[in-house]
Length: 297
Image 1 (cartoon, rainbow, N blue to C red):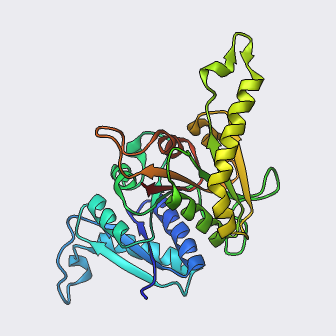
Image 2 (cartoon, one colour):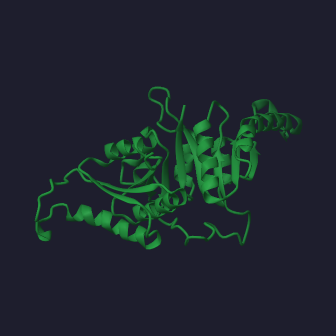
Image 3 (spheres, rainbow, N blue to C red):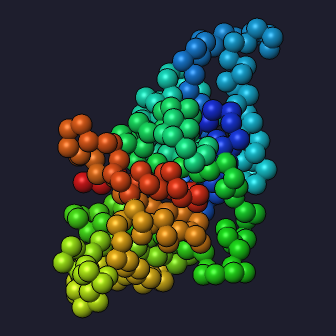
């Protein structure tokens, strides 16, 4: 049986190096292979005995070599594939997603879609890849091996957070989240936002009875969905968080101590609809921890 692969897309930026570190930590924990991929459309054919000063691929090689050195410093025994591809980045990463457990990209800043990993390709990769895509901010450098990803000095302990909509099946998303919690040895917080209906509002504010009824109904639905996963992963401490808010607001409010946030993306969306939904869109722009966007039907 061939080992699983985690692919990280490299472009020479500090953000892609942070992504390589995160991907290497994850690959080491899971005993996977790490692929360091750099796509350059002008990649020249290999010619034997080419002097270094005439090597047209020297810059592309250096991008991969730099990431390799960073990763090797922390993971000297990790199995690594160095992959230079003569292609545009987007199709190269989408092909890699077909062969990988996940694709990891660097994420640059809070800003427009175009500010994300590898220039302007990340939105299409996030919206089209058949594997989960993890976005890692440049400031989110991994901690030394054996240390907690986030200090527990103040506030709740570090955890994996997953946002669940309950609008349809989401097994791949929950499988990814529970698997991540097992891999990192952390509790899992399952978050669901349920906006209050119009009839819950009165001239003086929110009708507490109507609000309580909505919350109770949503809580029952959430427990029914998560119960089989708790049985499947009995060693993962699982906390359910239900907020009378939209899904986007609920996610943004509950990720302060998250070391990883997982949200879903439906593979089949209406024609002309955005490639990702509103929750994933908000998370990409506002959440600072590593973000996994997981495709599901």
